[in-house]
Image (cartoon, rainbow, N blue to C red; front, top):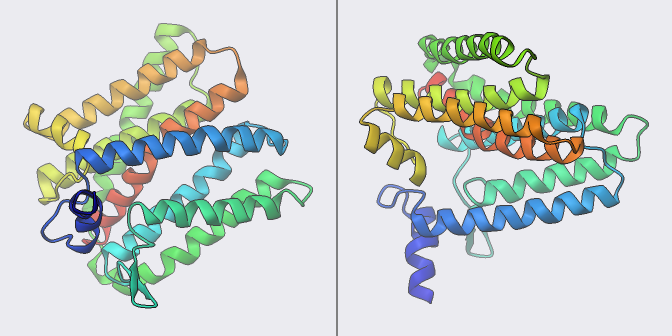
Length: 272
């Protein structure tokens, strides 16, 4: 069992130049743990009286931004991958530690925000503030900025505009702000992967994404899959009548795209 844990969980953390960060075993394990955490969190927040609405949705996304930016600080080697505690290395700012770190920051901020008159606005502002503070160290490598990465945003925005127009024509309804955020998150992830891998010699780190790109022979296949998946998710969520559950599911789907998408975009932007 010790060898198993070392091979599939510890080696990717300790030897990133030798082992890929994700493999089938740790990917499945992280996914199961994430699903359990999400289910427990959903029930817990309901007991606290939190409403799953647009304000909640975008407040949470501000912390996703924070986590992604911190991850890029580590990628750029401004911060180390690990910290020693009594001789034991702690990988707090890389997967899966970054999720624990971001989640802890979110929950502490949430409990504090619930004591205010407008908790979700307060929570969002805290997340934005943390994101800005996290972004400041990246300005020390501003000389490395690659402005051609703006093509990623151009692709993302173009797809959203075309999808929104087509959606309105096909279904006689407009995409909501949450729908647009879901689409943006997924397409940003796909567009950043497409540009970074096909034009900038970056590599896909995730198991599923790597399999799709290998099968398609180009990261354009990943972008196409992400776009189709997002639109399919929006379609099925719009059939859901229970508003709060729909918002929570949309949030999870958005996070899965927006988190890695923002990280990839910033990595290309700062050439790290």
